[in-house]
Amino acid sequence: MAYTKTITTERLILRKPQPSDEADFFAMHADPEVMRYFSEPPWQDASIAARKLAEDIAAFESEEFFRFAVTLKATGEYMGSCSLFSEHRQNRRAEIGYALARPHWGKGYMQEALSALLEYAFIERDLNRLEADIDPLNTASASALERQGFSKEGFLPERWIVGGHVSDTALYGLLRRTWEARRKGAA
Ligand SMILES: CC(C)(COP(=O)(O)OP(=O)(O)OC[C@H]1O[C@@H](n2cnc3c(N)ncnc32)[C@H](O)[C@@H]1OP(=O)(O)O)[C@@H](O)C(=O)NCCC(=O)NCCS
Image (cartoon, rainbow, N blue to C red; front, top):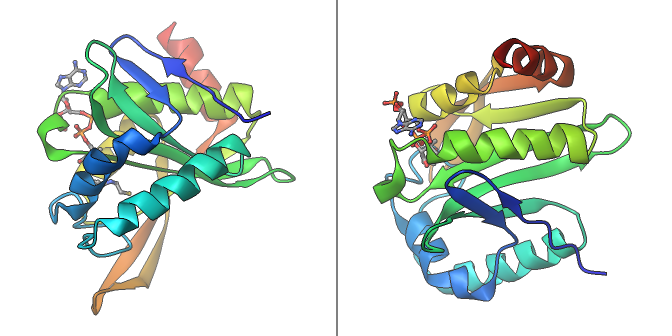
């Protein structure tokens, strides 16, 4: 049966992507500011959005990877996505990724979405370790990770070449036991 996990938080609903997300999904990935530190250039061709959405929906339903749509509970507006991917069952680890359309930055939405994603990853998917590969210049992304308790574990120079531009990786990690200890401390 197709997997259709939905997560509700105080202000958000995280849900399976759907075809009607296409215009917002494209607009976010066509924005050079959003894509500044991505491992691919801004999208120029709207057909990419339809293709990627179809892949994301199929992958979600088969539990291969999860690009949750981050939507506003009050209105249903699509604001961005947060993802759990490269899940490795034997080693119980996976990577996370995330993006918000620019009008939604600075409101704590990703903080709220990532808290829920981490709970899903560690409790429901029983993972032991999460990783994030970010550009060290992406300070907003580093803050988002640090707020969740991730620590910077490594620096991998010249790991990406996007549109001829060479960039580095800062590798962040979070262990389940670190996450649990922080949660107990916050309770
Ligand atoms: C990374 C990204 C999602 C972070 O977005 P963000 O809005 O800064 O992140 P958060 O949701 O955690 O919001 C935190 C900010 O909201 C503020 N805020 C406002 N209201 C808030 C609330 N109710 N609760 C919590 N924080 C709130 C915080 O003070 C913080 O601001 P600061 O960073 O200036 O201190 C965003 O910059 C983005 O989409 N970038 C482009 C895509 C990208 O680079 N993704 C990562 C690739 S690895």
